[in-house]
Length: 105
Image 1 (cartoon, rainbow, N blue to C red):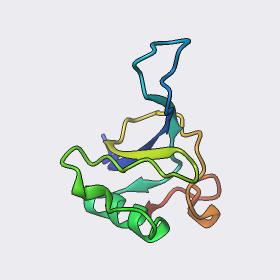
Image 2 (cartoon, rainbow, N blue to C red):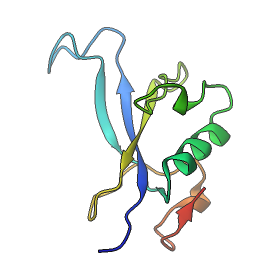
Image 3 (cartoon, rainbow, N blue to C red):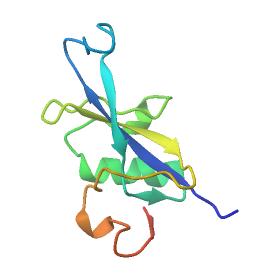
Image 4 (cartoon, rainbow, N blue to C red):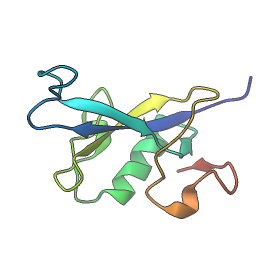
């Protein structure tokens, strides 16, 4: 089995909760970013480069970002899963695996 590395899960923050699911829930799953990293450190570095206005993702021991006040999105570093469908485009369109699968840093 080949190394599937790490990826970023994208979630959306809801200030008033998610009433249709659970009024105390604050986040809903958006999808997984179409970006692949060999290490957790690479994923954290990629997030930091593209979000200089945000606190580093590796400040939280769970590797979760704060939610962005502009987009209401937050990111979580996750272990890659073989065959997982990635639906969220990367921060930079050139990094997309739709043209060629590659490791990002």
